[in-house]
Length: 159
Image 1 (tube, one colour):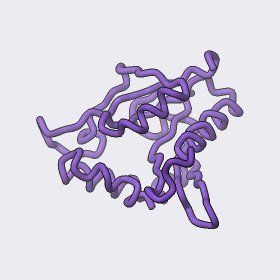
Image 2 (cartoon, one colour; image 1 turned 180 degrees about the vertical axis):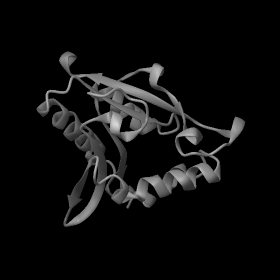
Image 3 (cartoon, one colour; image 1 turned 90 degrees about the horizontal axis):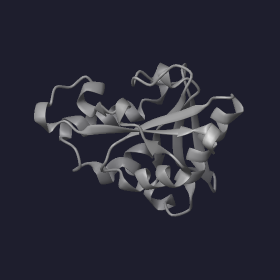
Image 4 (cartoon, one colour; image 1 turned 30 degrees about the horizontal axis):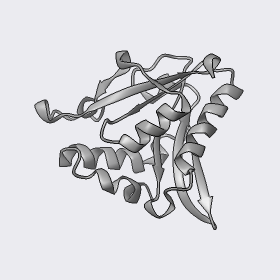
């Protein structure tokens, strides 16, 4: 499901970067001990998924301790247009709110324009001080062929 959801981005990043990202995204077992993997179902089939981090610092992406976060938000292409990505995002926001967390932060890539739009509609705002380089996060050295990872945050006191 994750591979199908991300297939549209295959040519948006250098092949080694995309393949490493896809492998890491599909490795849900690597996150079981530090996060919650949530799924959305339609007619008994997984239509989407997201990984929620109650403590975003445990993700290892440079976000502060005490913030919540999520990653690997993916919706199967056949299930798009039904509000699943928005619902999964809001579920993570509500999970953070239930834990009295003040801030939810995420990273995404600029080429994931639909995702950026959804996050902004929900109220996330850019926080470039937490931007990263994609290849560095994945342990690759691609030099000038690297892709930025852009950070967003949602301050729950404001929403």
